[in-house]
Length: 122
Image (tube, rainbow, N blue to C red):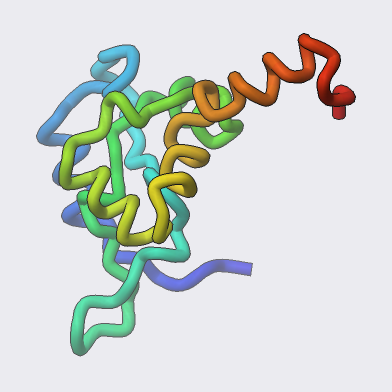
């Protein structure tokens, strides 16, 4: 099943303009990675196609993009203020933004509690 049509032009232009992965700085194979989730893409007024807001996208290489999607990479420190504002608008709370964009830092207290035998390993 295919999802709704999306207008990626502005997002792709941002990726091309930046020209390198935000994390590892590689310059080839760049992908437009959603900071939050695709469900927040919304049509511009009077259109049916969902517009991918450039502030909801960061350029990542395939390796970093995959790691981010698996929640193995934190990108919060690499986001612009506009991208952070858009993520907060989409997610609703700072805690939700942190949980999505900074999973490694967010998980540290949980891991520390597990290591201290305060929580059972899941």
